[in-house]
Amino acid sequence: MEVQGRIKMVGETQTFGSNGFRKREIVVTTEEQYPQHIMVEFVQDKTDLLNSYKAGQQVKISINLRGREWVNPQGETKYFNSIQGWRIEAAQAEAASGDMPPVPPTEAFEPVKDLNEGDNDDLPF
Image 1 (cartoon, rainbow, N blue to C red):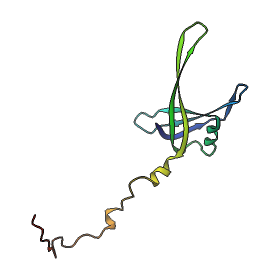
Image 2: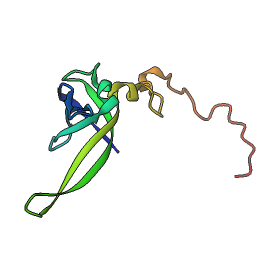
Image 3: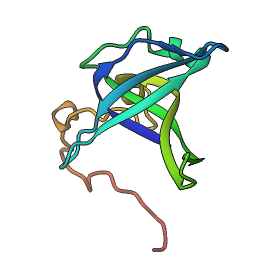
């Protein structure tokens, strides 16, 4: 899955616990009729992927949805979801290397003078 939009905020890397678990958050605002502020977390060695990105940049982030179950001290089961990023790239790079080559404007083509002139088509249909 992917999330595309403009970076609103890139957080600092946070370290948790004695084993050194690392997490870094980024917020991307989608550009649609009802823009959404989507928080994506990058963990462990993936936190370094955010080093060259700043607020205002257009990006495409490859994500995985994660879910987990937790039982609180009162015995109630709670469920949590997270969006975890594993790749990020500038959105302009995709536009430049898309599947379709750019189409020149119609003014770049010379108009046809006489379409039927020299028409020696001898096909039977």
